[in-house]
Image (cartoon, rainbow, N blue to C red; front, side):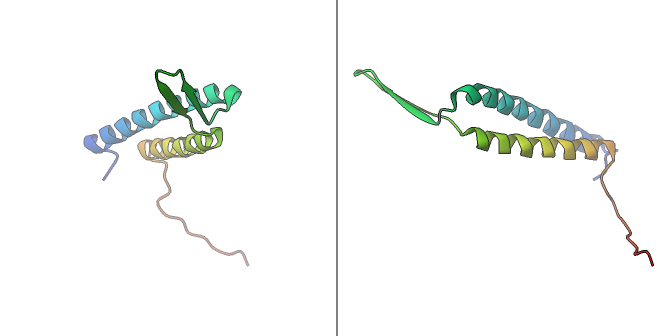
Length: 92
């Protein structure tokens, strides 16, 4: 596939938009969790019971790092900046 192919470029643009939306949601969740740092809590009013579980901040930060690296990879593909080949020689 080539970046000049409009279908391939459109699919990369769609993936990029989806990853950026996921990153924004992850960042919002991290900002919400940092002051609270709640993993799980339960509320029982006698009539009904409710449980809430949240991810740990560390897991969300790892997800954020992964999303950022995937977004960078997509940008490199769109701009044609990925490494194609490399020759290495030793100095004598």
